[in-house]
Amino acid sequence: MNYEMEKMKRTKSPLSLALIDIDNFKHINDTYGHLEGDRVLVQLAGIFKAQARSGDTIVRWGGEEFAIILPETDKNGAMAFAERVRGLVEDSDWKYIVTVSVRITTVCQECDVENIMSIADKALYKAKERKKHSSIFGTIAIEEELTGSSFILN
Image (cartoon, rainbow, N blue to C red; front, side, top):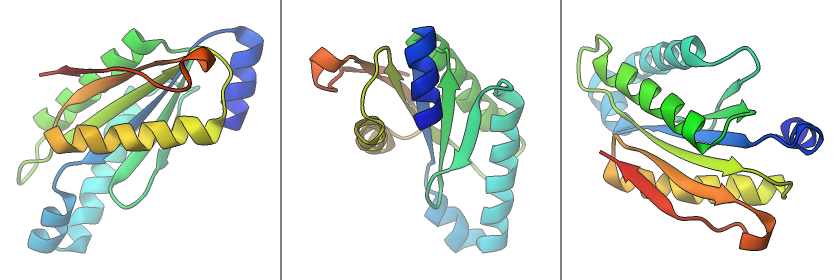
């Protein structure tokens, strides 16, 4: 994120962060075992990698969460990415139902990386309450004190 924030300062282009949570992942682990849970993680990582561009960064963020840094991506591009990924996960050939919740944070000006991550993490918890949804958590600008509005797509 620090590298991408520095690049954003130079290029003046937006930067988006997608946080993705696997809905009901504990149930998958508890019902089918941790090896099956690991298979789900690997298959999801493959979906994310197939949809990401070469300059995007994909990381596992916690037990059942992933973070994808989308440089030079505005909120519309990030939302299109999130919807595409969410749809592919739902349409994949699973032995059971697997869905994800995605929350997008878009930055258009330089701001503190820790604040961006904190806002994105809090926003993800809101998305998790609704399950299998993609949403945008606004566009962050310094004068907005890192606040945003939330838009949910069904």
